[in-house]
Length: 224
Ligand SMILES: Nc1ncnc2c1ncn2[C@@H]1O[C@H](COP(=O)(O)OP(=O)(O)O)[C@@H](O)[C@H]1O
Ligand SMILES: [Mg+2]
Image (cartoon, rainbow, N blue to C red; front, side, top):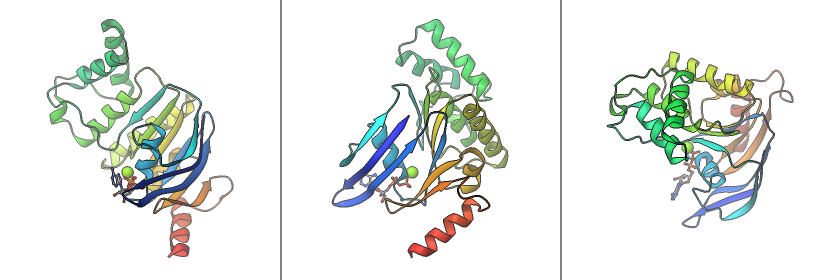
C-alpha cells in the first residue's frame, strides 16, 4: 500500500528527515515513533504531498487517503455535524450524501449530534472529530498524526478501541506517536525515528517478549 525509499527533507540547510525507508502492507497498522522533533510529521506531510520532498521515492497504492492532522483547526462557529457535512461536500458529495456521511461518522466516533460548536469542544471531542473528518468517504489508507495525544485516560482508551476496530475492518493505518503504550495496542510494526533518521525497525513478532518502551530506551541509550 505504501513504499517509501530514502525519503529526505532539508529545511534551511538542516536535514530533518534523512534517508527514511519503510513499507506498509495492505491492512497493516504501522507506527512512526520518536520524540518531539524526530521528523514524524514532516515524513507524513511529504507522503501526503503537503511538504515537498528534497529527495527519495514514494509509491502509494491508493488515491483514497484520510488524514488526521496533529492540531486540526475547525471553524469554531460550526457544530461537528456541520464540519463533517462541509468537508464531505468538499469531497464532491451532494447534500443528501454529505448529511448521511456526517451522521454515520458522528455515530462511529461516538460524537453526538449536539448543537455544541467546535469552538467549545474538549480536546477529546476535537480528536474524534478530526478522525471522523479523516474517515469521510471511507478511505483505504488512514494517516493519523498523534491521534491519542492530549486525551485523558478514558478518551485514550476509546480512541485506541476505535482505531483497533478500523484496523480489524481492513483499513491500512499509519500512526505518528510518541506514546509507546498506545501504539503497542494498535500497531504490529513500525520504526523509531531520531533526528530524522531511522534508528530501529520494530516488529511485534520479531521483537517478541520486549516491550516497545524497552526497545525504545535501549535504542536511545545506544545512540547517545
Ligand atoms: N516548515 C518548517 N520549516 C522549518 N523547519 C521545520 C518545518 N517543519 C518542521 N521543521 C523542523 O523539522 C524537525 C522535525 O519536525 P517534525 O517533523 O514536526 O517532528 P515530530 O513530528 O517528530 O515532532 C524539527 O526540528 C522542526 O523544527
Ligand atoms: Mg509531529
